[in-house]
Length: 160
Image 1: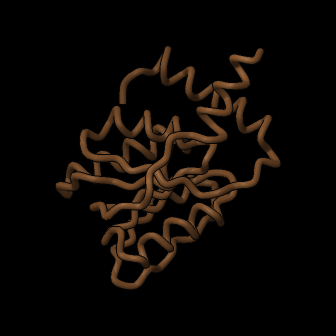
Image 2: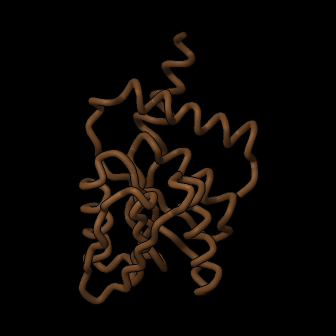
């Protein structure tokens, strides 16, 4: 049990992250506490870290609106799979089509490890991880969800 709790802390509570860096595009993942994710991604774009913001509106049933950022190309997309893997695939495909070599991702803190893993399987460029802060109020439920997604990515669906 101690090992499980320690791994949970390392992978989801205090995941590996980076300081913001100039990149070709910023990718904002959709998910719980969307307000914090959008605010972080928009703030990074406004500060000039990238000229492109890839903004996931989640699945078709979500009503997340597309942000507007001055002097930044905002590409809003709806992921038909409504999951992190689909968002990573979209970003990688967009990057390939537009010859982008670096992406900064803005997932939720609990999602950061899995989001990075999924994106690096689809995208060969530089990936910077700068998660949005989020309260740990839903931690047990969200941690179980992340464990399930991470195990699926590691053991079952190992491709892009």
